[in-house]
Amino acid sequence: MTALSVLDLSPVSAGSTGSQALRNTLDLARLADSLGYVRYWVAEHHNMASIASSAPEIMIGQIAAATSRMRVGSGGIMLPNHAPLMVAERFKVLEALFPDRIDLGLGRAPGTDQTTSYMLRRRQGISEEDDFLERFNEMMLLETRGFPAGHPFNNVHAVPTDVKLPPIYLLGSSDYSARLAGQIGAAFAFAHHFATFPAEEAMRIYRESFRPSVSHDKPLAILGTHAVLADTDAEADRLAATVDLNVVRRAKGEMLPLASPEDALAFDYTPIDRARIAQNRTKVSVGSPATVKAKLDRLIADTKADEVMVTTMIYDHDARKHSYELLATLFA
Picture (cartoon, rainbow, N blue to C red):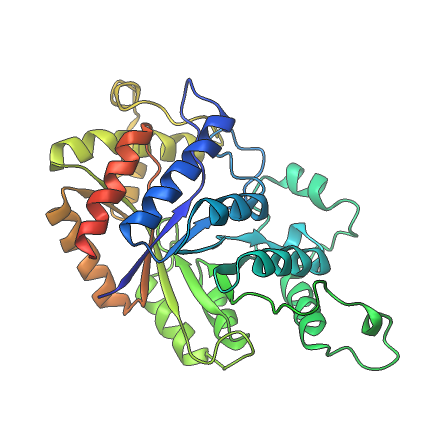
């Protein structure tokens, strides 16, 4: 049976608050742990009214402390925003406190808009070019003590020094990310829920490109996808109206809190809006357990995914919990 895990962005609903969204994350994590989910990841996003997950390393510690079994990690830490030494030390601390339960998922994007990205990086010496690989290599040289004698970083140690970095995962939505994940020997989490590149092709490229590393000796492919489950297809479709309006708003640069299904259904959509919704619905599994199982089974067969990581961005927290409860029955 394919392993099942959770990606949580701590969604903020209209009329609620970011602090409540973070408390909802802890509540959902406890439920996921009891339901048998193998992994629970939290994201890094900034300056978005719909997402409260801005500091994943803090939430990882809180979630790991509130649960007992499943692995907890980042989906992901956006490495362009951080000094490699700081990432290494924070995750070594987490690994020391929760041995063999922490994942270090890394992203290549800033997880925000251009201006906010500048604010995050302006004291780091911003490069106009993609410096992810340079930052990643620096972090790994710290871990392997690979800086040559005489190099100024040779005397720098990521502490605690008696703890190894957790397993590394690269997040991506393109063929480049798939190939890079294989070449650096990371596990690969493909974001099918917003990617335009075919998931099955990305997974194939990743496996063909994989080279063993200190982090992973064989490929591990995770399919990230969006799902909304309810007891009936009609109820799931109603809940997913929130997703529809969120997609339309994001396309216009409006990062607003998640609307209720009632407000979403009453929205005056243009033909272009409805085309965007229809296109996005092809990447969201919506329905009763039987309906969703049929769609996920096809995805798993096409991609040969080792694991399915599901995000559910809907308005009502109890409905979101119930969706994950129903999903768990499909993978029991």
